[in-house]
Length: 88
Image (cartoon, rainbow, N blue to C red; front, side, top):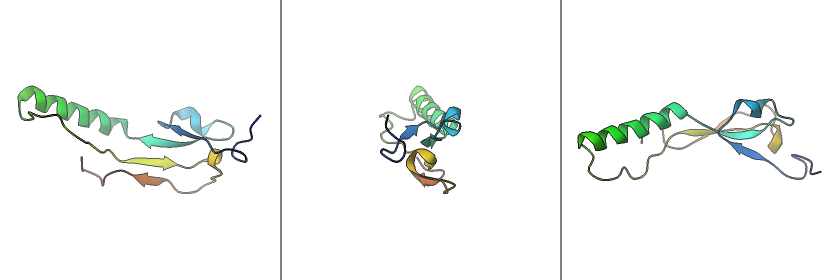
């Protein structure tokens, strides 16, 4: 087998609960699902009520990298990415 993280680093996406309990624990990208849902709902409601005539374009939701053992990390702080809070 391939040794993680010695031979290969592994990164997941969506920070499922099980990622923290895997062996080794899985580095993952954490997304704020509520913010994603809220942004989608806002765009939909604006389209329905006619205040947004064109497609929304690019909407950026803050995310963060949760570094765990699968990339060699141990106790390092999260790395944030995306737009500053409150922007779309």
